[in-house]
Image (cartoon, rainbow, N blue to C red; front, side):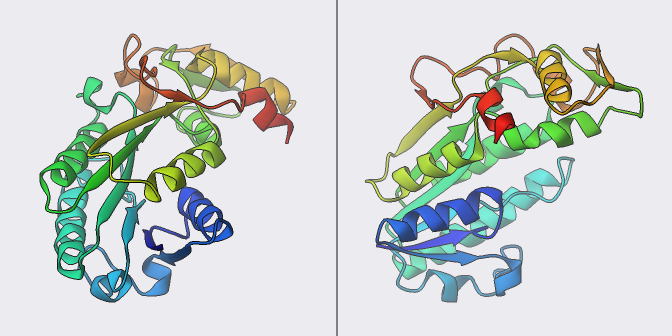
Length: 244
């Protein structure tokens, strides 16, 4: 199969391309660095010519009020071009529990992206993942100083980006789900606990202070970000990831 991977040079996209090509498919990465601009649509028709599947892993450059407009414009452009090119399957990556965190505009924007795809003309699949292990450093940096890291006790069920990429690749080469596949890691942590594990593994002497108002994930409550019973659970643990 020929598969156009939009955002194919990023953390997930580059791994998806590698997995697909190793499996005998023709996966082609597309991004601003290759001349594709999803906002203007420049290079989109060329990227989709002859493609059987398009995987859209492009992310909004910000998590703020600009994110809904980003997903509206990019999805409108992508679906119109995919329909014109006769692409038979469109795949996006979204977030487990996104609709359960309405106070986060970025999560509302991801739900909007899903809704646009569902209403569009191209057979579709949505892969919803929990938070990535690789984002823990960025998460801690938002609310840290030289002595402390402030994190909420929000429950999360994180997973390795390599497992996310494998799930996306598996869905891309299958029949369109016309629905959603949820994926998650094997363990549930509170975010502050995960921060302490991370710092200890790295010999970082800073202290984690539990602060349920700190950072992006403070807006999530209860088990909003935890996988439900229908999720595919991957095996890589956080401590295995840290040991690599």
